[in-house]
Length: 480
Image (cartoon, rainbow, N blue to C red; front, side):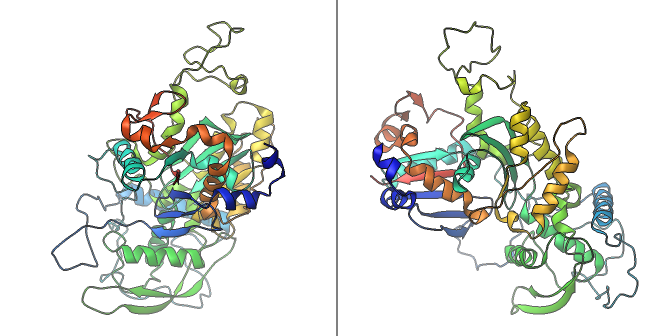
C-alpha cells in the first residue's frame, strides 16, 4: 500500500501493464494493445470466410431490407427543415439566391431521381445472424482466450466506467458515440448507475449515410453507383468524407472534395465535386428522424445493447442484509450497501432503448438519478467518447441542446461538456488499462483453471458459464 501511495502512475502502468492485453471491441473497430502502450492498435472489424469463388468487391446481403417508406422519407425531410431553421441555412427544397455553383450534376447512381417517393438505398446498421447467441459468443471468446491462447486470467469491465477512468475522472455522464450505437450511462464515484443506462440505435455510420442522402437530394453527388449496402469500401469512403468535412456551425457549409468510385472490373475512379449542407448530417444526432432509425422491424432480441447487460446483474444479485434495517425497506430488490441507500428503488428494470434525440436521452439519463446535487454535478460533467466525439462543433451544440432539453421546472441552468484528456476513440481502452493494473479489481479476475474446470468465479462462487449476464465491451487479459 505504501508503494502505491508513492509510485508514479505511469511507472505503475509500465511495470504491471507489460503483460496485460486490453481489448475494446467497438461497433466498427476493435482496439487492442498492451496496457503499457500509449495507444492501441485500431483494427476495423471484418468477417472472413473461406471460399473457392472469385473474390467480389460487392456482396449483397439478401436478409437486409433496404427500403425507406414514404412516411419515413417525409419525416426525414421535416427533420431537415427543422435543422435548417436552427443552423440558418435554406430549407431542403428552397433555391439558394446567387448560388455560385450548379446544384444539379446530372444522373445520380445511373438514373434521374426526380420523384419525391423514390425508394432510397439504406442498410441495417446492426447486421447479425438472428439465430446466433451473443452470450454464447462471448463465452466462447473467453474460452478461446483462457484455454486456447492460454492466458492466465481475464476480467470484464463496463465500457462507460472504463471511459471515466481513461479520462482521470470519478464521476461523469458518459456518452459513448460509436459507429452504429450510442450509449449513455452515469458514473458516480467510480460506480456505474444501472438505472441511468440508455441506448440509442444510431451512430457515426448513420451520419455518413445521411451525408450521402443529403448530397443526392441536392444533386451534388457525382453520377456513380455509390452503394453502402453492398460495397463496404463505399461506406469507408463516406466515413472519411464525413470526418474531414462535416461540422456543426451556423450558416452554409460547403467544400470541394474528391469522391471515389469502385466498380467491378474497372479501376477506381476519382470525381471532384462541391459538397453542400455539410453541417446537416451531424445534427441528425439530435434529430434522429433525419437518420431514419426505424427503417427495419425490431430484431428478434434486443442484441444492440447486449454489451451493457453486465449491469443488469445488479437487478438480480442478492446481497447480505444489514441487521439494522427492516425487511420492507427495499421492496422487490435486495441492495443494502451504504452507497445505494440514497438512490431510488425500481421494481423492474428500466427501459433502455430510446427513440429520442441525443440531448433528450442525456437529460433523461441524468434526471433519473433522482438527486438534485448529483444531477447538477453530472450536467457539469458530460463526457463524450467514441469516434463521433471528434466532430467539430459538437461540444457547443451538445451543451446548447441539452440545456434546451432540461424541463423548465428543474433547478438546473448550466451544462458543460468536459474536454477529453485523451483521444475520445481510445478513452475506454485507456481506462481498461488503468483499471487492469489497480489492486482493487483483482477479485474480479477469472482464472484460467477455474474457467476451464468449472466456470467458477473465484471468491464468490458465482458460475459464469451458466450466467446470462456475462457481457461487456472492455476486456483485459493477463498472461501470468
